[in-house]
Length: 100
Image (cartoon, rainbow, N blue to C red; front, side, top):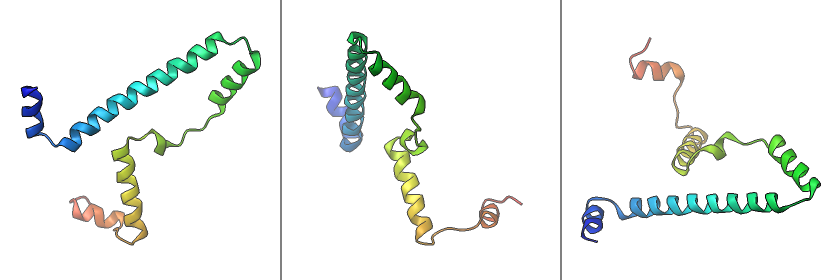
């Protein structure tokens, strides 16, 4: 416990709890996947298997959903900045960063 307290005094509590939440979320997703797999394995319903296969093959995943929360927040913030007119051109960016 002393090690944990020492660690947490040097670390933000919010960061620590976010880390724990990500572990539990990951564990819950793994448990759900195993549960679904078990149901599929135990099923003799050919139509269920066909439906699942069709769902997997035809599902279009939005690239945004593949980002973690921090990345999603960054994208959302950038879009908000664009909407409010807070941006500059590619040419201006090249000038700011010393490219010609």
